[in-house]
Image 1 (tube, rainbow, N blue to C red):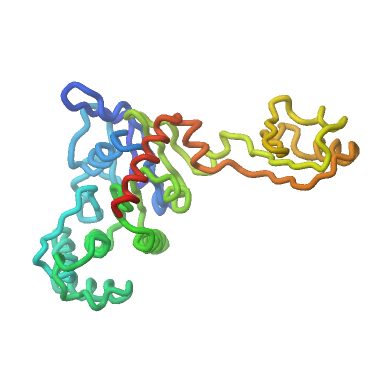
Image 2: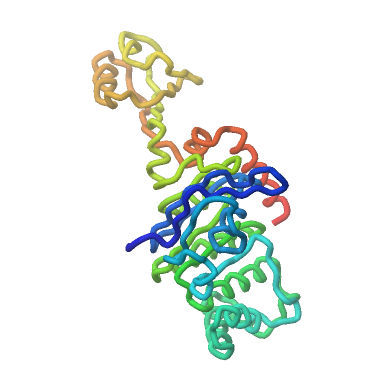
Length: 314
């Protein structure tokens, strides 16, 4: 990795007097997969549009691939907006090639690459099929191919998983990883924590137009202590004094944070006290737990609700 593909400081944008983005700072290293995570309405789309130069911030500063004026780097960027749109009468190959031509790729080169991409991804039979005849998932895949057909250095995806079934979501994850391995920097927004946890090296958690956290996924998870799950044969004994005072007992299973002193002193007390260890596990908190701690339960509920609505319509 080299420098920063994207850097933003103090971005602020208001619509009708209401702040949509309020002082956002971001730093996206070259060659990384970077997630912008937050509920719908948090300011994710507005942030991406400001980074790309589609709209200008009211305040703040941003650079895109080293350019002070983001639109100067447009030919090096692939952008998939949240609002999808393809000409329904165009064939899949022509639609992909057309999107590449908008970024300066010769049309015939684009057609050749498009046919190859479709074939490599099991869609070779749909090269000459019109967009209107494709399923929603296939049409979104075609638009994604059009986003990357000119081999951009930076790929920006706004809610790319929205509306896709599980199979197409898996294909998209594979494609994102492949593009990153080929050297592209990828930034995508999402309200689905699982995608960010599986794909991203760094994330920004946005809620209420503000960045609540920015950094490595591991750093977000490390804000919470690991959780211990313990089941013993005996329910009481001198070893109980070694458990944290706030240890919860649910149906004979103790749950508590890993003590700062580590597991060894507790393990010694359990063995010497004859507790009879039947189950002992230490679980590192997931990104969902970290998100709740950072952004709050209300933001997490909004994200779950949006995800459930999409699953019902997928």
